[in-house]
Structure formats: C-alpha cells, structure tokens
Image 1 (cartoon, rainbow, N blue to C red):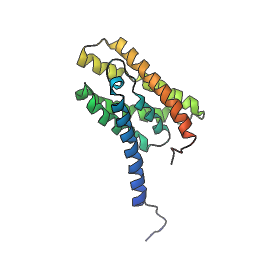
Image 2: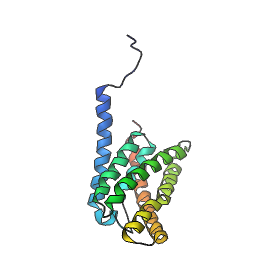
Image 3: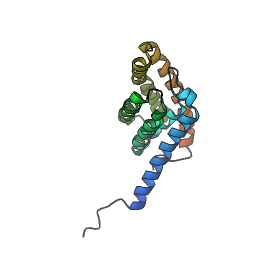
Image 4: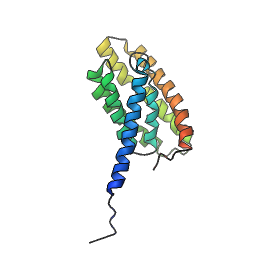
Length: 169
C-alpha cells in the first residue's frame, strides 16, 4: 500500500465542518438579531461582513452561501430570496475570489470585494421589484448603498480580526 498518498483525516473533516458551521450560525444569528435592518428596500445587513472570509479560504464560500440561504428563510420575500440569494451569493463569492486572487494589498482586496457585492444587489432589487412592486433602479441604489455600508463596516472589523486570527487555516 502506498503510504505517500495523503488522505484527509476524520479530525480534519470535523474541523472543516466545524468552521463552516460556525460561520453559517454567525451569519444567521447576526441577520436575525438585526432583522429590522436586514430585509426590505433599505438594507443594512451587517452579517455581510462574513463575505470577506471567502477571500481567505474557499470553505467560507459554502459557509456564507448556506448562511444566506438559512437567513433568507426569514425574509418577507423568502419564496424568491432563498434560491436567488443563495445562488447569487455563491456566484459573487466565487467571482470575488477570482478577481482578487492576484491583488496583494489587503485593503484593496477588501474594497474591490465590497464594490462587487454592492453592484450585485441588482438581484435583491429585482426580487423586491417583482414581489413588492418597488421601483427597480431606486431600490438597486438603496440596497446597493446599504450593502456598501455593511461591507465597509464589516471590512474594517474583518481586517483587524484577520490580524489576530489566521482565516487561511
């Protein structure tokens, strides 16, 4: 038997699942705790700070996507918000990892990610337009501005937290 082949141990798998579960839980709890600001035409979803974790390790793409799916079960537009929010989050996280992969400056990487997420809020605006008959462009502007503010606040928090915690491991 070839001993040089490295297989993940069950403790590695448990550790990975634990890290994913913690982020999923944190995303849902922060969204629920601030639910009054998390849904609707003007959104300030501070749990969006966890989007940055996907830049550190690909496991967090799954964690944040699952967090969005579970949190969106509380949404007044849950019928659309769960599948569209989940798919949109997954795709934007993968896009952010791809676009920022060669950016060396940490602050620039966070700023680019925040801008991409703010622009991606057309999906939320589209849902709100369909479900609540809100005007698309004004809604996109307001939701995008809320996303940018959430990401800016969260980016500062994650930036300083990343100095103490190695999210890449």
